[in-house]
Length: 603
Ligand SMILES: Nc1ncnc2c1ncn2[C@@H]1O[C@H](COP(=O)(O)OP(=O)(O)OP(=O)(O)O)[C@@H](O)[C@H]1O
Image (cartoon, rainbow, N blue to C red):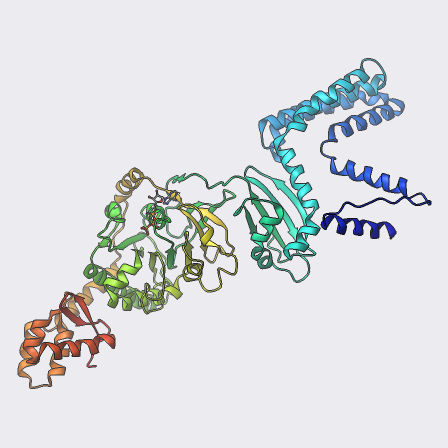
């Protein structure tokens, strides 16, 4: 009791930068203290003292065996030979990952076993056995003392000896170390949490942990343990960044969209597998953070699947996606083409939904004859900017596309509500991938509300291609780095996969044909609309609206609207402004207008 108090007092003094003083009283406290100090030193240096301890154990065993069972020497000898021969072969299974480690373990086993066999037979004091163990122990101990991983482990254990104090100071008091492992990149330790603490508490303390453990900034990660217990976490400290260099794409990891795509390795080398089937995906990050890079990985994989038709929108005039053109069934590089592509996708969606309903099925199972339709949109904000009325289509696809496997994969720098259009597109994204962001608040924009405070720190990603992924199968913030496809790899893969591409299925084609036919039948020509507007005797407002509804894709020019309505330019613009702010009409290009696709009736 008294001892414990003294220890606590000493610890408090040490924390305050004071050295404890030892008072020796008359009732023999010194031996007690000295024993404690020696025991502590033995414990602290237990790893370094390992070879000496082994020599001592061998001596005790030899004396005992020689006295009671000297005939056992042969058994010991055979066992030593078998074990030392097996170690180089099976040592990896017991944690001896390097060949040199296995050879060292085999040498020690052979040496110790041989000596013990001899000492059992003739006695440990029989010459030259004492000399052998006296000289052999320090010689064979040198590799042990010099071993980098062992020394690293000892350093970590010593750091973690102070865990009770560290945990107090970082606000995780009561948590405890369960085990530690040194690996190629640094070390990992499993911790048990105190009652009521959660992994989120540990994640929120990462900067404090880095400071308390004396690591580099950004070196600490917090993960759930493999058993997923809520009162445990794994702390990972990286001395070397496993993602320091670009990682070359190893080729497609899938041949059907029903399998998850390997986007690149996590820091523990496990692949970041993400399923895209019947899911929409959003990829965000600052300029130059690697969005186009990951789209190449996705394209490389999807183009290798026979059960996916790929459509794409790249309003940067096809700069990013054109190299994949041979694998893309339909590529839109202008606002006009994008609008038409998305409208057709909605038609397909509806056609497929009808087909599923008529056949009593719930979801579209992609096959080469009935492929999924994936629409890749590079720089989504440009679509919203240049074709705002396409929001109606993307909204429909986002809400209703999953079951019929009409899916969106969108990349954008900052998915603000403005950049993503008015609809529900952002909220419907099932897979979120965040590359480096400039501002902390962008994390929540890309990954969802509350993710920054839950530890998804995409602002700390420090190289292009590094990302965090949030998806049904990835619920904790683990850093991954996307594979990198060189330009040659893109050209080669696109050429290779171009032959394998499927075409749209019968159901979708039929829906598109039927829609076009009905449009042709119902749409009055613009000339008819002009004539109607001026002859009908209807109000100028109704005439102008009729012309906007009848306008072709590229819109009707304002001078024509002025002529047909017989009103002033100002009046026409006033009317157009009213329709536009109600979302009924859009300016398709400079001076050309038309009604939006969903505003098909009189305002
Ligand atoms: N996974 C990766 N590994 C290593 N380097 C990468 C990776 N991805 C991208 N890079 C490097 O970063 C550069 C910029 O990447 P990328 O063009 O993909 O960024 P981005 O986010 O699409 O930028 P922007 O928004 O300007 O289009 C690339 O030229 C490439 O050199």
